[in-house]
Length: 345
Image 1 (tube, rainbow, N blue to C red):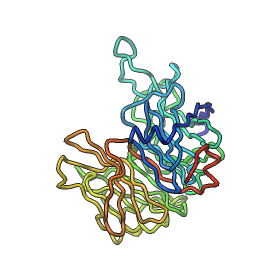
Image 2 (image 1 turned 90 degrees about the vertical axis):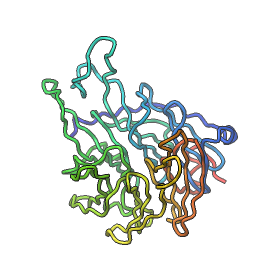
Image 3 (image 1 turned 135 degrees about the vertical axis):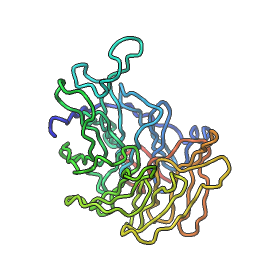
Image 4 (image 1 turned 30 degrees about the vertical axis):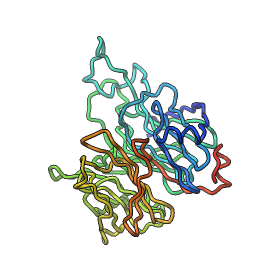
């Protein structure tokens, strides 16, 4: 796997955006003692704190797409992980050999990398040389990142698909990748999450059953033993480890379940809501496990919302309407945030 590693440190310009200007745009919000990760303008990202905000531009040369795998905010709020496409070396194995190589319809030849942005160092590091990099998830200590990848052949004589698809774990201390065996069926564009003790990964796996929404699977780190616990996708492990939230009924229902597969209960449902609504992308827990943040979108119209749900009493509050989706929620102490160029109340 060493020849897969490509580390390109890139300096990024980090612009502080005033809270007042964000209030006028009305596309983000904040939570006490927290950092929230939002999508921003022109493909960048925005870190929102109660009294200040930080824009995190994408790396220079990145190919921005309208839809992409999910980014991740580290539990300490000090790093962001994002899948990016960058222009590729013309001599490399082509990831999509069926694409035209000349003429007006010739696409940009690209490679996929995993980008890690450090709020402390104010720079990007780019890892890997892949045909696809999926959604990312930081380990609880922030030292490892799990993500789905399509590993391309290094031999230009064999450019044809398919390439091996596997779940990978990147050790940020060494820059080395570890392959999680037998994970080709992991859904690359869905949320995945670590258990609070770092011993398990919760992932979405495609189902062998026709027209099935997928399966929530727990993978034990090291032994790589797997256990199916529910039908659905986009699992999010609670900070104390008591619950896993996920999306069921093709994204129309948010469900919580204990990691042992017991106690399943639907806590918020969009079925029957006028306009055809569903949850998408990401589910985030508060540090005390009392609240969830969820993105919602309207299938029969342009509307979108970010909703906060009280898990105990089922009360839902709309936090933003037609604003930016939220992709991360980290509980942060006042003293730590000063290192990031942000301020908390």
